[in-house]
Length: 91
Image (cartoon, rainbow, N blue to C red):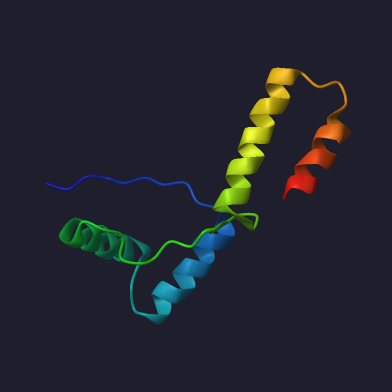
């Protein structure tokens, strides 16, 4: 029995990955199958995830940004520029 897996991904990433798969003689579907089989076999991700996330923040910076957004929502600040200045000051 097989299952259908659906994923949303931005066009740039999809096309870049497909170009790599094509050079390797793989389809996107076969590359995903290889990835999932490797995860199931090793019970781990077959690569070391990076700590940089789009648009280029470290995990720590991303956590700080998300916390500051929550803080700003709770304080209902009327001066959004003060919050932005503080945010960039803390990064």
